[in-house]
Image 1 (cartoon, rainbow, N blue to C red):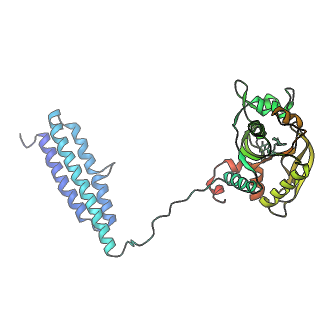
Image 2 (cartoon, helix red, strand yellow):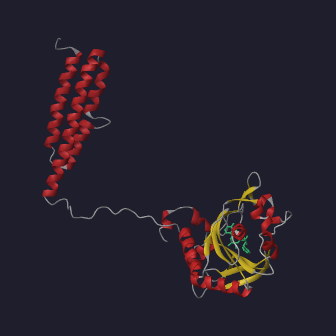
Image 3 (cartoon, helix red, strand yellow):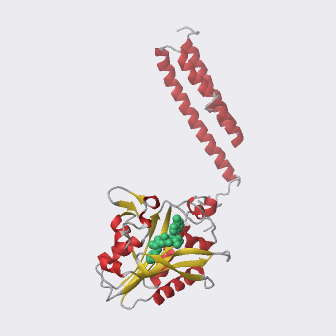
Length: 335
Ligand code: FA5
């Protein structure tokens, strides 16, 4: 091997790179100096070690093998020297009191429940204290539970394909939680006192008070002697407990195929300047009782369905339903 053999030259230079770079890392007396040395020798883009690696390409296969092996050894010893230098500087800083090891660590940001989940949980708690238990039903529902059993005839406009998300084979995304009334009555005998909370879907045009997916709370009470006065009392009590004693609530005569008589329930909005519709309610229609095998001569019942987004908005002074679905942390953090 002569002294101008390319492999020999490359190895000599690698050797001197190792000596100089380790000396520089060891000599660094501050974190800044160490970082400068790191960039000069170990920098990903223009570090000298990187340049030494490029050298590999200029060698023949046998030279590549020898040089490559030596290069890996140098790289490892440089990395070890860097870690050792870091540790040394850290220890020195602690000893000098520059690092206060008694400081608390960084506090991680804690998440919390979404305002709608909070609302749902509070409603379950509140109606639980009125003696209502919780029932559930599927979001993918059959036409029978969403319409037929609720006394909504085939020709009714509520069944318009443009107003519903129909799926295949007689199923749909439920458009109201009233479906759960039917499922509960099919499964148990009176007396019944349940609420059901869940998502419902309608292809409504989105605006400040409408979404295409939203949540409802359904209530159903069936027993001997249940009256409209009882319904109004429960809804007023609920509104006061959830929204405060000064909340204004009004009932407007309305129509639903599954209740008779029916009302719409409005609440004065938080600005105090307008009424907003919160839900529908009424006395369970005898046809609905017959469809589930209850005797309308024996029991009566009331039912209600309220929009959870609007309850949440009224409670917290939120003016646009879309805020609840944008998942902007700056908004969500406030609840
Ligand atoms: C119903 O859905 C009936 N099932 C309610 C009912 C239950 C009546 C039991 C009688 C007995 P309605 O379509 O009005 O009714 O909807 C009830 C409430 O859901 C509305 O008052 C409103 O608060 C909320 N809501 C309706 N559509 C939307 C929407 N697109 N976005 C947000 N909330 C909505």
